Length: 138
Ligand SMILES: [Fe+2]
Image (cartoon, rainbow, N blue to C red):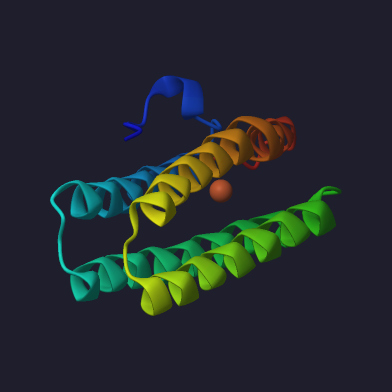
């Protein structure tokens, strides 16, 4: 099972976004812990539900900051966010239908973790650099 913890290499240089990413990673850890402890399906579904809600909240906040600052990468980010949300929805469906099978649990962990780290270190750090250049960070 993959372990995840926030560290400085994930900072985008904007406090508000960093704080939200920290919380998102906390939620991912909760989900990973649920799986590890073999929690019942309902508990896992609830945790995943929290994660989906928080992800929605975070993406909306990020996109608002981008729009307010005329960020040229807004559309690209919107597309990435929409794809991620669609994947989360299909994970939720699979989990509801088949329960937390080992295969599903593994792919959830690897997929969510990889996506988040890649997205933060790529797209969001680019956004952070832009906001800092504009003097809009923090
Ligand atoms: Fe983000």
